[in-house]
Length: 160
Image 1: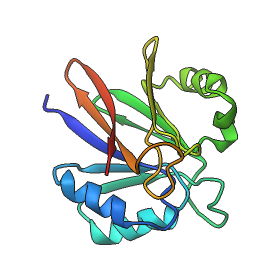
Image 2: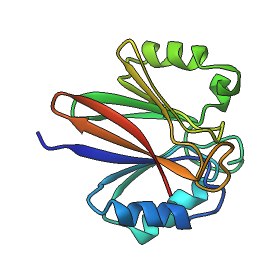
Image 3: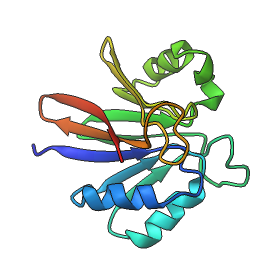
């Protein structure tokens, strides 16, 4: 099995230039996930990169979005569950998010909302918040990279 790479964005808030730059840096990436705030940005990316598969959920700022509040996909036998995080109260800790991820049978749980990049491995569960490309609360603008390999998973946060 070859490595499958997925880009993850969150909280872009109508600043699509960082998304474009990241996608151009990773031209081989075929899957992109947006974790909400602003889903209009993912619609713009779909128009610019019609050869890629885009997935998105709405965030607390996406009042009129048609995207769901949570979604999942299976890639190479690994279940990825993703949500913006506001409904799982991630600003108050990750206990509720972890419990939900395990109930859903997730291998990887993605969330945004806090604008703070975070990766963690917790007893078989990979957790990632890619931070924010437009309004990071700590550090520089960032996005997430998931590599699914034959023998494991690697989650990383990249800065622009």
